[in-house]
Amino acid sequence: MAGLCCCMPLSSRSNFRTSRLMLETRHGRTMVGKSLGRRNLQIKADVNFVNAEEGKKLIAVEGYAILDVRDKSQYDRAHIKSCYHVPLFIENQDNDLGTIIKRTVHNNFSGLFFGLPFTKVNPDFVQSVKSQFSPESKLLLVCQEGLRSAAAASKLEQAGFANIACITSGLQTVKPGMFDSVGSIELQDAGKAGLVTIQGKISAVLGTVLICAFLFVTFFPEQAEKLLQMAPSG
Image (tube, rainbow, N blue to C red; front, top):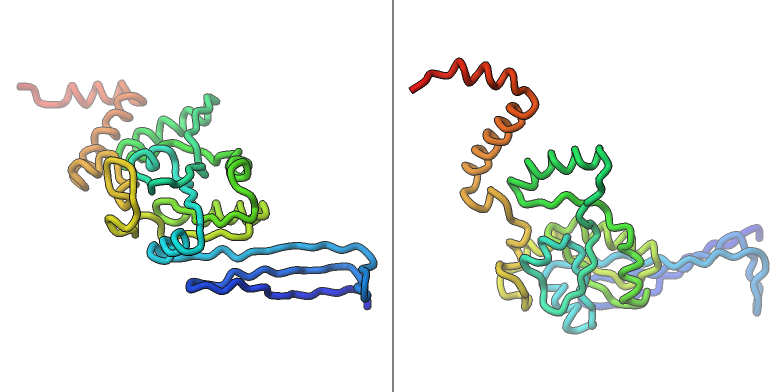
C-alpha cells in the first residue's frame, strides 16, 4: 500500500459538546509491531463554544481555568474573580510616523467616543500562555464580544492546546451575579466607555461635530479664519 491515512475519533463526552481528537498518519506503511517509512502524527482539537451558563459548569465540574484575553482597559473595569489575564491585543505605543498618525485619528474618534484603546496584536500571546499552562490544561477563554476569544483559541489550538472552550458572544451576555467579579461595573458593561456612556447618541453627535471642527481648524487654518470673519458679530 503506497500510503495510509486513518482518522480515529477519540471523544470525551460531557454535557456540553464533544471535543474530537483526530490522529492522522501520512506517507507511511504500517505493519504489525512496527511502522515503516516517514510518518507524520498530528493531533487536532475542536474548540468548544458554550454559553455563559455552560461555561460556568465547565469551571465548576470539569476544572477549567478562565483565561481573559481582553485588553487591559476592559479587564480593569471588570473581570471574573480568580481568572488569568493574557491580552490578545496590547496598547500600540510605537512611534513611527504611520503609527502616530493612525493613533491620533483613532484617539480622536473611536478612543473619544467609545473609549477603545489603540492596540496591536500581542506578539508574546502564545508564549505567555505557555509559560502559565501546559498544552493539556483545560482553558475557558473569555472576551467582551466573543471575537477575540475565538481568535485566541485558534492560535492556542495551532500551538498544541487540546482542551479549549470559548463563551459565545463573550461577557456582554453574562447576567449580573452569574460570576464573582472584580471591578467598578458589571461584566457585561466592561466594554462601554467614552462619550457614548455619558449622554448616549447626543454626546456622540456633538463630539463628532467638535472633532470635525477641530480637525478643520488644524488642517485648514486659513479657510477657518475666513469663515470666522464671515460669522455675524455681537
